[in-house]
Length: 151
Image (cartoon, rainbow, N blue to C red; front, side, top):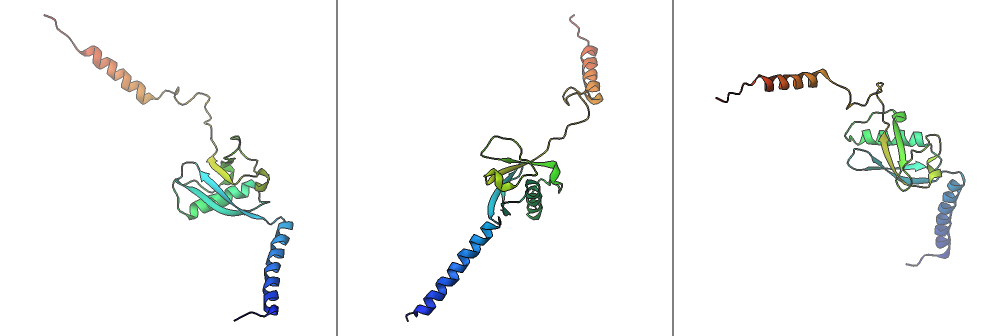
């Protein structure tokens, strides 16, 4: 059965209307795109849609929510200020949390936890523990207590 010309033009108008709606959303900067975030220490990437003008700090928050929703391990927490987002295909510098995610041009990112430094000034390997000193002292005493007879 053939369609009449009025039915064909009606379908074309509906298709064109969808295209125009898409163009209108572009003009309003509501462009959504898929980003892929690899979480450091996790097994696989997180994929979700974001708006072009969304801030990096809110993208980090969304990534953490998706991470928890998928029940992934290790448990990271919810505080977005404790994490940094890096672009994969550029120099490995953290992104500014106040800039929009679309301004960087990339779609692949790495999420890692900020490194928190201990309040002590000495590196951890230089810090002496009483347990290791006592063990070494016991070993030395044990070695020198052994009496060797050569008669």
